[in-house]
Length: 122
Figure: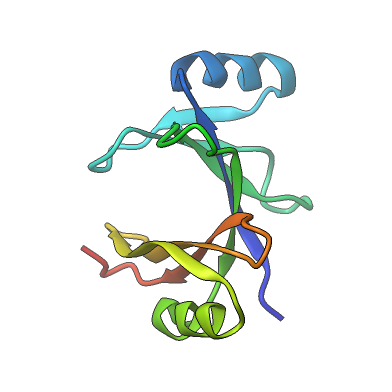
């Protein structure tokens, strides 16, 4: 069974929302050193239930919180998603040193991510 492994919070002002979540929940949030403005969110120790996530600049007014599902192949699962009535809203892209991901929408228009781990991604 494939699991949700990451969440993303979209924000008009990422630095403002970083302060909010740090103050409210005590989350550890650090700016990523990758090629885009992105903040990595650690919600707690790895030996406790829960997942970690990220914060990014809102790309469009409808962007909200996205959950990302770990998959063995982004290409295979984007095909499955389309065949099942969903759609790809942002095609496969490399996340350097992490893997490949795509954003998709289900039959109700809910956006989610899929991620294929591959540390050699560039």
